Amino acid sequence: MNKEKFFQLVEKYHAPAGRYNYYPRISQWEDNLTYEQWYAQVHEDEDSLDLYFHIPFCDKFCHFCGCNIKVNQPEQIKQKYLEKMVKEWKSYDLSASKIKNIFFGGGTPNSLSLEHYKWLFEEIGIDKDQCDISIEADPRKLDFKLIQLLRDYGLSSISFGVQDFDQDVLDIIGRPTDLDKLRSNLIQLKEYKIEHTSIDLLYGLPLQNKESLSFLREILKEKLINSASLYPFANVPWFQDFYPLWTEHKPDFKEKYGHYFEIITLLEEFDILPISFGHFAHKSSRHYRSFLAGSLRRNIMGHTLEKSPILVGLGVSAISSTAKALKQNSKIFENYMFQDISFDRSHLRSSRESKMEKIFEELSTRNTTIKTGGDLEELIHDGLICSDAQKGHIQITPLGRHFVQHIARFLEKSL
Image (cartoon, rainbow, N blue to C red; front, top):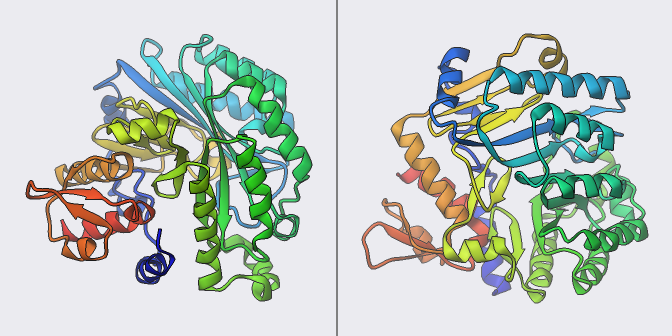
């Protein structure tokens, strides 16, 4: 990829844009569903479904993280929280439905114990190898007995929140890491033959430089991962007191995106290629082959090989979706724990919103032509898309894969 052209486009399109993993965004929701109406929406197509469990627990704060978390909670609170999620699940009366995928996000899902997961699977009614399981994990504290249990139940994807491979960077963002231990954990994880092993990296962090790239290169050489996700650092309001200390160490615009460019160049050297929204996968992986074939899917958690028509999100702040509707649980931990089963926000999509969501999913998951419509000459001129012979069809270029969220924002405004 031409570096000069890349920076020209970054300067033009660097303004914040949504993730478009569901549509419309919460700020546009109309709260136009009662609980009974939401329940009816879920039961319109109940043959199969996906589950998302939000596990908010972490040992301590990381100063870059805007997730909904609870820090340093005792075991009895964790158990009570699991019990509330099970109660929420049972309120749906969907035990006859086939569960295809289970996603664990957080927070730190591997902050729960082996016994917690055994209990949860039994209460939900999950059998071994019944479904595909994906989990976000802190690579600094891996319990391989837990990994084995999850593997027995269908663990196929694990994503590690690494953020960076430079010790000084990790220390200043409140995430001290023994990098040798991290590497050792990744090596040991290979024994479990997990199909999709990914790392999350941030760019735009204070003190960030080329030092971390040498460690990343070694991990890539050893084939310890086959996927990566890159996210820009963004200020978190409740950590504002830390940021003045970072000022002299924060990269400027050119340094920030220079670091991104160096990472993607290194990933490409090892055949880990862009899909969309900062997600990269090895060209031999099923995710990337599905992307080329036009069969990859995307939901609220990210890219997935299969997607059920219903996603039931369980836990504090969890988002659920059906073909027509969206809802979000209370974002306040205490409210979720002690109030009756309900939700804070909801939205019944219009026909236009349903159409737009379909377009956004296809943009992020297909390397084939996509029917859109609208005046897209500017995107064509910038080299982000090429138009198909059929009127109203486009295909995203390899360069455009790094700008999909900005293409989506352009389409949202123009269609």
